[in-house]
Image (tube, rainbow, N blue to C red; front, side):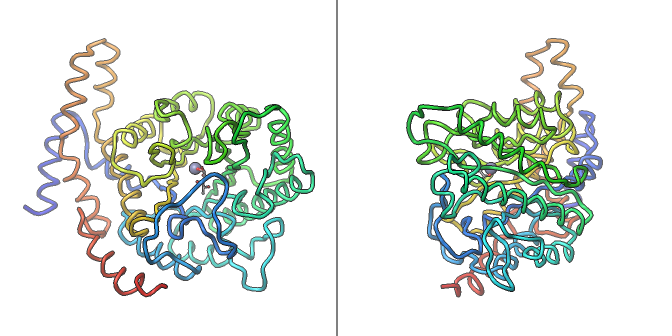
Length: 415
Ligand code: RNT
Ligand code: ZN
């Protein structure tokens, strides 16, 4: 049977439960996922000072990591060639490209991202952005919450510089830019004063956001975390802090599903957030024990997050991926994560949602469970393969042979 014939057969199966597969494919093709540049080089960036700090860690030593803007862009192209649809890319400030001399983070300007804009324009991509408040000598103790006024001011200046760059992306590309603020500030052990650092963080954010910027095209998001490595007891930017800050200041709250207690589910938070704000931002990732950044799989959590996105309106959720795995082929990690996010969105689009909701309202909970479980083995794969075919990307695992070839011809030569 051809991919098309399999699709036609799946279409009939879904039709019998009232699901329109053509409509699902159309909806899926309109969802843009933000692919994070930092998977390609273990969050190293181009400033050349090496060490990753801030309580995050990329473990592994797989050969072939991108070392220059050219290599990173080539690797991203390779990944994007296996991902159906046109998406967004997510950059960190540490990926500035210095053509006429290095400047520190408080001094970066739109011109340092000109090459990225050219890259995105040529490919029809949007760009999202992140100030980088880690991996820097001035971030060794604290950043926006620092008790050292000179340091705090430096990072405020960085935040403002990034806001201008985010606006430059939005203007140049004619597509909104989500600028996400995450800081690692916290304490390894029990703090004596939890309030003062938080008050300083609040003040710093107010200062950054005091400059004028185009609020209709630059969506500022704030990302909380429960703990970081070496910062286990206290995180200045906690969930309550940012949820309140975002609500009061009309910003986006960004939920990273690796940043909560293990039994807390981000999927469950989405509807609660969207009842109070128009938009929400996500970092989709996979938490394993102490690590919050494993490659996104097609697992229960990702599928449940996707279900909530679809049911509450994909246009209200800015979806970005956030993981870094240095132990496997880095391009493959991107492709697996991006395709899994899309597969999860597809299975959500193929649910007979109204029917399921009705069963819930009628308290036919036995039938609800039966249907929810049987649906798991419906032929979503046949619909996915057809989506790949329509988008001219390899279906199933067929893309991997080309990764192996690229590894042999390009990655293995990087020493
Ligand atoms: C860290 C946060 C943050 C970073 C990236 C590199 O715990 O999740 O989003 O992963 O900004
Ligand atoms: Zn994150």
